[in-house]
Image 1 (cartoon, rainbow, N blue to C red):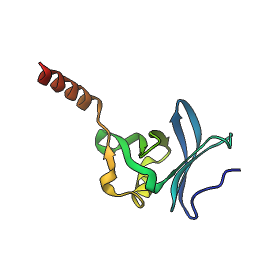
Image 2 (cartoon, rainbow, N blue to C red):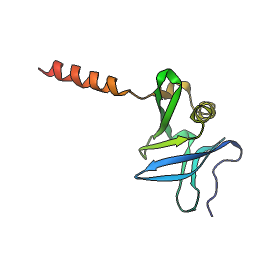
Image 3 (cartoon, one colour):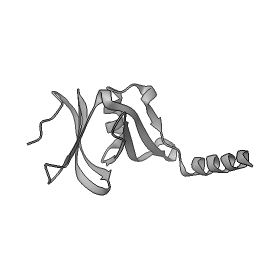
Image 4 (cartoon, rainbow, N blue to C red):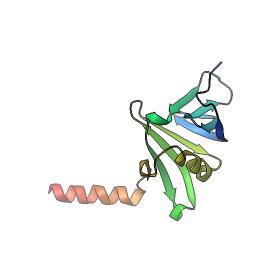
Length: 124
Protein backbone atom coordinates (compact mmCIF):
# COMPACT_ATOMS: atom_id res chain seq x y z
CA UNK A 1 0.00 0.00 0.00
CA UNK A 2 1.13 3.53 -0.71
CA UNK A 3 2.15 5.73 2.21
CA UNK A 4 1.05 9.36 1.99
CA UNK A 5 3.68 12.04 2.55
CA UNK A 6 1.14 14.36 4.19
CA UNK A 7 0.31 14.41 7.88
CA UNK A 8 -2.63 16.81 7.39
CA UNK A 9 -4.90 16.94 4.31
CA UNK A 10 -6.26 20.36 3.31
CA UNK A 11 -8.15 19.42 0.14
CA UNK A 12 -9.19 16.28 -1.70
CA UNK A 13 -10.78 16.58 -5.14
CA UNK A 14 -11.45 14.32 -8.14
CA UNK A 15 -8.96 14.95 -10.92
CA UNK A 16 -7.37 13.82 -14.15
CA UNK A 17 -3.62 13.43 -14.66
CA UNK A 18 -2.21 13.73 -18.16
CA UNK A 19 0.75 11.35 -18.10
CA UNK A 20 0.92 9.92 -21.60
CA UNK A 21 -2.45 8.30 -20.99
CA UNK A 22 -5.31 9.99 -19.21
CA UNK A 23 -5.44 8.80 -15.60
CA UNK A 24 -8.48 9.40 -13.38
CA UNK A 25 -8.20 9.67 -9.62
CA UNK A 26 -7.96 12.07 -6.71
CA UNK A 27 -5.68 14.94 -5.81
CA UNK A 28 -4.75 15.41 -2.18
CA UNK A 29 -3.14 18.64 -1.06
CA UNK A 30 -1.60 18.59 2.38
CA UNK A 31 1.09 20.08 4.55
CA UNK A 32 4.01 18.15 3.00
CA UNK A 33 3.15 17.41 -0.65
CA UNK A 34 0.87 17.47 -3.69
CA UNK A 35 -0.37 13.92 -4.30
CA UNK A 36 -2.35 12.24 -7.07
CA UNK A 37 -3.73 8.72 -6.58
CA UNK A 38 -5.28 6.62 -9.36
CA UNK A 39 -8.84 5.58 -8.59
CA UNK A 40 -8.39 1.89 -9.43
CA UNK A 41 -4.71 1.00 -9.70
CA UNK A 42 -2.86 1.64 -6.45
CA UNK A 43 0.52 1.39 -8.21
CA UNK A 44 -0.17 4.56 -10.24
CA UNK A 45 0.41 7.60 -8.10
CA UNK A 46 2.31 10.91 -8.15
CA UNK A 47 3.77 12.47 -5.02
CA UNK A 48 5.46 15.87 -5.31
CA UNK A 49 6.93 17.36 -2.10
CA UNK A 50 6.51 21.13 -1.81
CA UNK A 51 10.27 21.74 -1.74
CA UNK A 52 10.56 19.95 -5.12
CA UNK A 53 8.03 22.27 -6.86
CA UNK A 54 9.68 24.83 -9.14
CA UNK A 55 6.59 26.42 -10.76
CA UNK A 56 2.82 25.97 -10.88
CA UNK A 57 1.60 26.91 -14.36
CA UNK A 58 -2.12 27.56 -14.91
CA UNK A 59 -3.86 27.77 -18.26
CA UNK A 60 -6.25 30.70 -17.74
CA UNK A 61 -8.98 31.48 -20.29
CA UNK A 62 -11.69 34.14 -20.56
CA UNK A 63 -10.06 36.50 -18.08
CA UNK A 64 -9.81 33.95 -15.30
CA UNK A 65 -13.34 32.58 -15.55
CA UNK A 66 -12.17 29.16 -16.75
CA UNK A 67 -9.01 27.23 -15.87
CA UNK A 68 -9.05 24.01 -17.92
CA UNK A 69 -5.77 22.60 -16.60
CA UNK A 70 -2.69 23.37 -14.59
CA UNK A 71 0.81 21.93 -14.45
CA UNK A 72 3.38 21.47 -11.75
CA UNK A 73 6.96 21.86 -12.91
CA UNK A 74 9.46 20.15 -10.62
CA UNK A 75 13.14 20.83 -10.15
CA UNK A 76 14.27 17.36 -11.30
CA UNK A 77 11.44 15.23 -12.70
CA UNK A 78 9.79 17.44 -15.32
CA UNK A 79 6.25 18.75 -15.64
CA UNK A 80 3.03 17.05 -14.56
CA UNK A 81 -0.33 18.26 -15.97
CA UNK A 82 -3.65 17.95 -14.17
CA UNK A 83 -7.30 18.95 -14.51
CA UNK A 84 -9.75 18.85 -11.63
CA UNK A 85 -13.36 19.51 -10.70
CA UNK A 86 -12.67 22.86 -9.02
CA UNK A 87 -9.29 24.17 -10.23
CA UNK A 88 -9.60 27.56 -8.50
CA UNK A 89 -9.99 25.85 -5.14
CA UNK A 90 -7.00 23.60 -5.88
CA UNK A 91 -4.78 26.53 -6.88
CA UNK A 92 -5.79 28.46 -3.75
CA UNK A 93 -4.87 25.45 -1.61
CA UNK A 94 -1.50 25.16 -3.40
CA UNK A 95 -0.83 28.86 -2.87
CA UNK A 96 -0.76 28.30 0.90
CA UNK A 97 2.43 26.23 0.46
CA UNK A 98 3.96 27.76 -2.70
CA UNK A 99 5.14 31.36 -3.04
CA UNK A 100 2.95 33.52 -5.29
CA UNK A 101 5.97 34.32 -7.49
CA UNK A 102 6.16 30.63 -8.46
CA UNK A 103 2.54 30.52 -9.65
CA UNK A 104 2.37 31.74 -13.25
CA UNK A 105 -0.05 31.82 -16.19
CA UNK A 106 0.74 29.88 -19.31
CA UNK A 107 0.82 31.66 -22.65
CA UNK A 108 -2.38 31.70 -24.66
CA UNK A 109 -2.41 30.60 -28.29
CA UNK A 110 -2.11 34.11 -29.73
CA UNK A 111 0.86 34.97 -27.49
CA UNK A 112 2.70 31.92 -28.81
CA UNK A 113 1.99 33.00 -32.39
CA UNK A 114 3.07 36.56 -31.65
CA UNK A 115 6.35 35.38 -30.13
CA UNK A 116 7.04 33.11 -33.10
CA UNK A 117 6.32 35.92 -35.57
CA UNK A 118 8.52 38.50 -33.84
CA UNK A 119 11.31 35.96 -33.30
CA UNK A 120 11.37 35.17 -37.03
CA UNK A 121 11.33 38.84 -37.86
CA UNK A 122 14.36 39.54 -35.62
CA UNK A 123 16.37 36.76 -37.30
CA UNK A 124 15.88 38.27 -40.77
